[in-house]
Image (cartoon, rainbow, N blue to C red):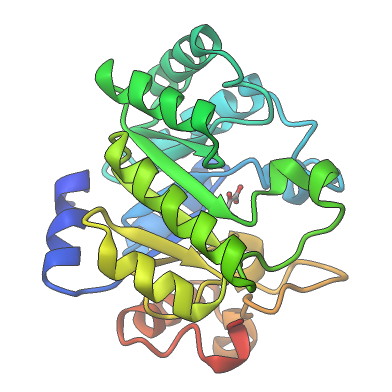
Length: 264
Ligand code: KIV
């Protein structure tokens, strides 16, 4: 199996070929995803909800992410693994250095952090200058749930759309090598993807981004209650876990997922 690196994703962007990403939290699913062709895995702090049963990502700790990163790495030795910096694990530069080392020693290739404020941009700069590869995450940033009040689409009005666009540019300029856009209108995601040189991955951001990501539980329809508009159950269509993964990859690559019903 070929090793996936950031250069592979840059090449895909240049060739205008789309790629599919999933969250993964354990050895067996990481192995399965990898063997079916998922080349990039995110050990997301969504594990606070999907694995731990919390109603937000806030309780997740750096030790939780490090533990799951090492399991995912053992299952997918060739994948590019992005690991989340959980809530307040990067609030100071010293914290971000220490925690980046922890996640990278556990097997991460890249760390992901939320937001586009000046201090976040500075943190991205400081990390990349110290050889830590960084993925930005803007739009809906779930770690800010207590400020936002509820999970909702961001960037509908011009003022907020402009802020998200400027943040995306600042994140790239600071040295981030990937950017995740969560729950923003298609049109805005399209402009950002076209403007940035780094690959842009969307979740609830339309089908013009370079890559797509979904929380793994959503492609199998395991998520209970409020199913996000952008999610799709590929298992109900295919009736088989492996076929569901392949269907997700193929619909992302041929541009059929997300379709209009999954977009804002
Ligand atoms: O934690 C996570 O799973 C994420 C994705 C939703 C992008 O951040």
